[in-house]
Image (tube, rainbow, N blue to C red; front, side, top):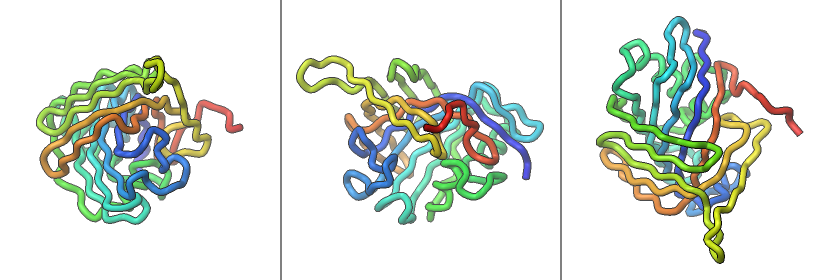
Length: 214
């Protein structure tokens, strides 16, 4: 198994309500799952290949709950990545060189019936996890805007977090509202639905944890 590790931030928008039942071992809000988002890797490596400053994105669609399978995936890697970096990122994204079900990539890969050929294109990524704000533009594929949830009465920003001490994607996520639209192999249109802003740190064995489990 080739050792790898990545650390960075993510913004993900799915079609569920703000609570996202998946985070609570419940069925999706509308009975199916659609999502898109991106990760910006600040530091990382795959074997001898450095991944610092690279970005990846993805569009997912499942006809039912994720664990029921039959999913589709569009993997995307920033065009600025070198050929070696592209190969490394795609291996991580498809759950290779990873202990079974140790990361979200490995879990999701096990639920797919179709993975489209990867797209290499420009990824613009501007995300502030703590402020719960971000924009992602994946040229020719999708756009995502994330912002804070607003109080329905006052319009003030509402802050909520999800803490998963034993999660396989993040330890702590700031929750916001996301609006996204994708085109191509998986065309989705999400408006004012669940968005998560999180710091990610993982390797072959799963999350590298920075918090003490309660």
